[in-house]
Length: 195
Image (cartoon, rainbow, N blue to C red; front, side, top):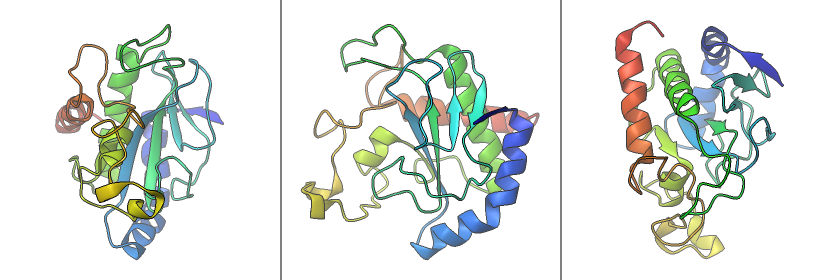
């Protein structure tokens, strides 16, 4: 685990680009970025994610190989990067608890997405950049075989149950809009050109 800058994230993405694309194409899709929160404390990081963002906006990586398969998103980890906010311990759909996502975390996540998307030649849209909640709701239609584990129509997220609701909404944003807000911010940062 080490702290990194956005410039270092760009270099890691460029180094991993060929392997990420090869892995994603082996399962018939583009590279994906999956957005999470850890459901842990500020400063608490999990080996399930490639990139972590702490409450103050600082960025950490757990690996130097962004193509390494991590277990961040059910049946969607090949050719994908997991990005997690270190926050939301004890949160419920009705209470953010004592460690909610911070403004700095959301802004940094958007900046990280902008950097990764540019380096990896990704369009920032729901088909390539998804919250864990959107993936669980299968909003991109990918459905990588969820039915075999009892999830009809490939949907097990907050639109259908209480599972996997991370970033379904963020403080000050309506339910179901978290991903749209974060992608909108990421597109704005990418258009600024300085990232």
